[in-house]
Figure 1 (tube, rainbow, N blue to C red):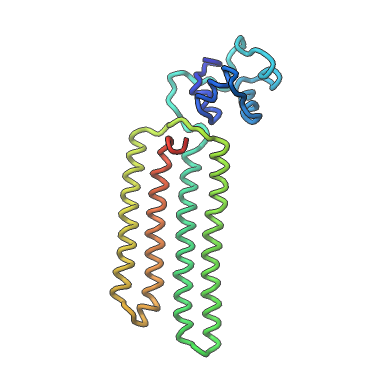
Figure 2: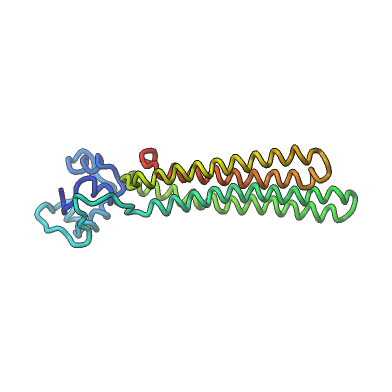
Length: 236
């Protein structure tokens, strides 16, 4: 125990595994510069003192003094980061599918003005909706993915701080969202069957089909990512 911390607690603060801390202490490996600077901050010393000196006799600093019996906590804000990532990815996918749905409405209207200049107008609006949906969805997914990837790179190991109750809540949420997503997809199929190959079916059935699919997929993706969020064994 150093600075009133166990290896597990120090590993949690640094976002590494306990085995990494053990290897550092035994001299089998050395921490990266980023981790060395973090250690300096934790122990209240300079880089020269940390690398060249002996800190075993120093008094524990008042900045970071976790107790050995302390419960694991979300030191790095993983839960908030993971929730934000799940929301943006699921909403991004839904936005892309909704863009397709809206564009199909205008393409359907354009078919009724064949040979008229309004056909080109509605087709142009349809293309704007299509590419707007794709662009809007990707503008949510790509930055969120890059941000989450950077978070994982900075914190490759996290101590499991979720309680059994929180994990059960995540499983229940996944079940509800999965059922909701399946119901939306089933409703979309029923809608297409009922409307059939009629003008209303082509004009409204296909767009509504994609809309319900978009909502259903959003539920399923979000539920799956929420369930994966509490599985820190897979994350590590």
